[in-house]
Length: 482
Ligand code: 4AD
Ligand code: MG
Image (cartoon, rainbow, N blue to C red):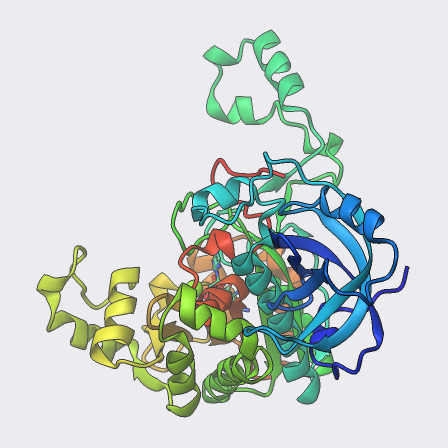
């Protein structure tokens, strides 16, 4: 059954040719002689209008069949229709289809949850398997696809190779201990053994010995990745410029509108890039993505602008045209300290920037995207390049209004000795990082990279308020439905 997409039919000439339309009914209006059916197939925001005029003498003589089908149609029903594509008589659409045949593929009973009355986002989240049929989620998921396409195009146009880093890994890239352990050992069995051995009176060290990783699938403890960066570095220091783009997992207990336990991260890694090169390409990248949304997804953007976040189009346009503000962490904290009474957590040199600080910088002080660089080493990951001051590292976070952090990146420590010293200083085990240290031992080069949170990007572009609404099936604390 080859059918045309509604998006193609809507943009073709209304020359009276016969078209076949397949989709789901959004609304039907049946007024004595005239029937109007709005059908959507997800290919674009707009519906196509099917019309049937009972008084039209040139109707095909299958009126009974059509009437029978019409009696089985309600919001949500799926159908296949054929008819003449003509210029629309009514306002609101350029073309319409005069029904010639109508087949109901699947009826839709009245307990269909996606009715016309505006449902809350919470309700739609509970019905995530059907929410793609609403205007909002159709637009969001089309945008998600477009932004992924744009990510690939941006890097492919610039000589980057798309690589795939492992989802199951033994290393905690960010060192935050927020990993989901992957195991085939049975927790129930372990509990039984523990009871048998009288675990209640056992010392902690002895209890830990009850777990025999030798019997686990991989023969050692492993987890879902929090970042593909370390492995990406091995390929950047062989292929030059690479990027990974895939699912990333964090077991952080953050029940916020900006955190997911499973999110997508795009992580480019570039040999011979210093921190300034890194910041340049981050800015170019974000502008490229926003410009793509504005120019290639205008129909869905119009909807976001009208119904989701008034003004979002102007905001994105402004960002595309304005240079990002670059400030050192030290300058940023000095600015924040001037407004100390505005914050729940008082800012001071050495503190990790909280969301309230990040948003204040980008929304109140600079009023544009801000790149904060050279953070104190204590609040950043072990792999970042130490500055000559011995106190700060070549890290950068990109902060945007309404959201806070959208990108985290850095120049990587390329000195074997300095990296080893940092690993030891943090109490990490050098043997766990031997392959990573090898990159510094054998032909080390300056290199940099960053991670863009894909759902954070989507929040920014669509103006949606909750990160759980820009991924089809969100995972968060106590939430893993579907
Ligand atoms: O700042 P992060 O933790 O940086 C890294 O993981 C580096 N290894 C990246 C690199 O240099 N290759 O995470 C990067 C971005 C954040 O800026 C944020 O946009 C997003 O990933 N992110 C999350 N998005 C949704 N839910 C979460 N729990 C997120 N944690 C980070
Ligand atoms: Mg970060």
